[in-house]
Image 1 (spheres, one colour):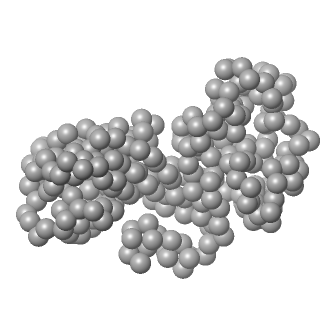
Image 2: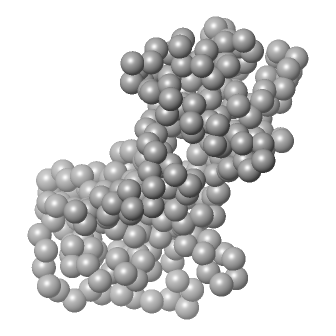
Image 3: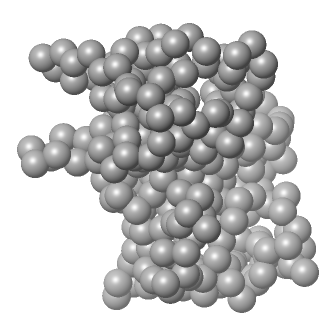
Length: 276
């Protein structure tokens, strides 16, 4: 088992102490927290104008390396990290000859959105799986690609679909607002099919969920939790979750990391789609 101190030492963090400040000021806590998934991308990819880099340069007089930035994106409260796994991941990502980066426009990352509904008057949790879709012009949007709703009765019923000249969609920056657009989508259930991938609309459970919403039997209460699944880096998969705590290691952090070849990623994706 790898302790936090051993982990930091193994990846060269203790020497610089870039992310080990102990101050409790609101400014510091705000600066260090990975507040949005966009900031996760900025730090992982070492974007030159990332706010955290400007803050550390101003406060400490040094510019953080990409190594320290990537290392800071792991959940330090997890005490079961394997040193060899993290080291292999860091070595591959930071390879100077062929560095690897996370790509927002890649289709190999997914938003796992857990929502609370009222179904026929009773609370029911339903998970929506979302994926980035790109059109021929380069435009992007979030699309619902799977619905996991084991508590909803499957009914072979026709689905109402009121179309407009311009189709409804989830904005490509919906993640920045906690997918608040999902609430707006369920407020106009006649347009819900616009938000769903065509392959997903072939599943009876999906059409049953949408039909229940159109009948007002299913009412969205809140988005409870969002988790991201990244399968885009060769040989790896990892998840990113939000950790709300008074710490300089808070916000959107890597919560799980696993070596995975293509068949293993395919199996993981089938689990996301509940096909196993």
